[in-house]
Image (cartoon, helix red, strand yellow):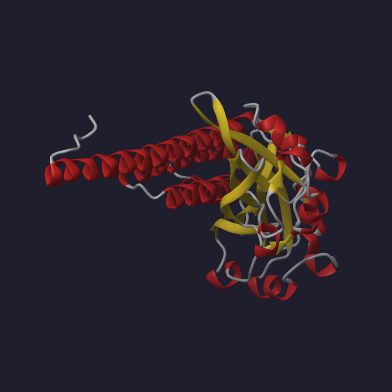
Length: 351
C-alpha cells in the first residue's frame, strides 16, 4: 500500500511538469503499467471526425502491435460502452467474440484486458486499457484504481489541452499580424477548431447582406458535395438568424431540431450535432464559425470559450483585410489625383 501511494505521488509530480498532451499521456501510460502491475497499457483518444480511437500513448507493448490500426467504433461495441462511462473487463480474450485484432493480440501474448474511460471536463475523450499476459479476473479494487488513474490523467490532459489551445491561438495571432491573406487565416482557424478539439469538421460562412445569404469562405472535414449544396438562406435558417444576433447557438441532436435549412444533407454528411458562433466586428455579426460532431453532443463551457476566441480571431482578420482593401483604394485614388495635378496643374490631390 505504501509503495502504491508513493507511486501515485510520483505520478502526480511527473504529470504536473508535462506541458503537452502527448507528454502527459505517455507519462500516464508508463505509471499505469507500473502501478497496476500489468504487462502493458495503451491510451486511445477519440477522433470525432473519423469516429475512431487512435493510440496516442503506450507502455510495455511492441511497436508491431501498436501499429495494427485504429479502433472503429461502429465495429467495436466494447469501446462504445466504455465511452459511455463504463469499465469493461475481459478475462480471456480467446473466449470473447467481440475482440478486435484478435490475431495481433495472440501474437502479443495478451490474455486479459481492462478498459476504462479517460474523462475530461465531464466527458469521455478516450479509453485507457491495461493488458495481462495470463488470464486475470480484475477485482473491484483494481477497476477503481485504474479509474482513479484515468481520472487523474484526464484532469492533466485537460490542462495540456488548454496549453494546446493557447498555442493555437498564439499561432493564429502571429499569422494575422504577419500576413494580409484572409483566406490563409480563415483556413487556419477552421483547421485549428476541428483538430484542437478533435471534432468532425468546421466551417466559416460570411454574410452577404445584399443576397441575405451566408457563403462558405473556409472549411475543414466537409465533403465537396456538402459544400456545394448551396448557400445558407437566412430566411430558411432560424439557427443562423439567431446566431447573427450575436448569440452562440448549439444543436445537440440535429435529428430532433428544425432550425436548419439543409437537415437531410447534413445528416447524410454524417453530422449529428453542431455549434455556431458569431463573427462580430464593431458590435455587428458579419458571419458564423460552425463546428460539427458525428454524434449527439453538448459542448462544454471550455470548448465554447476556445471557439469564441477563434471566432474573435476570425473577425479581426476580416476587419484587417477590409481595412487594407480600403487603404489600397484610397492610395490608388490619391496617386491618380497627384499625377493629374502634376501633369496638368489643374487638379489638386485629395488630402
